[in-house]
Length: 284
Image (cartoon, rainbow, N blue to C red; front, side, top):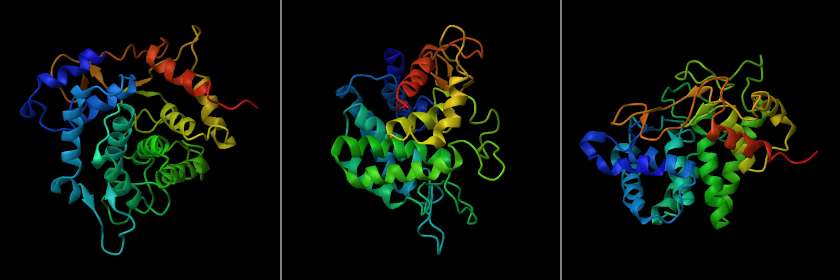
C-alpha cells in the first residue's frame, strides 16, 4: 500500500492541482501513510511535509475565505481545523516534525472555540463547534502533547472529549437523532467510514481510545453499536467507502486499495481498527 501511495512522487503540481487534492495530494498521502503505520523517519517524505507546511502558513490559507473571523466573534475563528490536525498527527506519527509543527499546534490551540472544538462554517450565525472539524485536531494535539509532554496540547484535546461525550459521541442531546454534518448527506455517522475519516462511530471511538476516555459511560452506546457490526467470521465491514482505487489522479480516488466495502464482508484494515478500539476498553 505504501508503494502505491508513493506514486504521489510521479505527479507534478499541475497534475495534482493542490496539496489537498482528494485524496492523492501530499496532505492526504501523508495522512494515509500514517494510517497504515509507515515506518517513521523516512526522509523521502520530508519534502511533502515541507510543502504542506508552506501551504498551511500561506497568505491564501490564513485569510478569507479559508480563514475568517467575524467582527465581535474573534473567539470563534472559522477555520478547517481538521487540516492542521491531520498535519500535526502525521508529522508526529511519521517522525517528520520540524520547527513549524509546534507553530501549527499553538495556532490551533489559540483558535479553539469556547465550547472546545472548531468549525469551518463561515456563516455569522454559526455558534457551535463541528464534530467533524474537532475530532481530527484532538487526535493531532494529543499525539503531539504525548510525544513532547506539552500540557496545553493535551488539555486542548481533552476539551474536545468534553464536547462530544455529552452527545454520546454521535447523537443530538435533544431528540437522540444522529449528528449528520450538513455537507455529508447519507450514510450518517452510525456507519463505518473508511479510509478517509472525519466523524463516524469508529473514528470517534478511536479518538476517545487515544485520549483514554473509553471508560466514560457515555461511550457505551457507541461501543455497543460498533460491537454489533461484527460479522460471523469475527471481522468488521467497511460500510461507507470514502475513497476508491484508481491508477491516475482522480477526485476521491486513492492509489492504494483499501479492501472490500461490502456490508456482509469483513475488511481487514477496518477489522484491525475496530479490534484496537474494543481491546482498549477498560475492564469493568
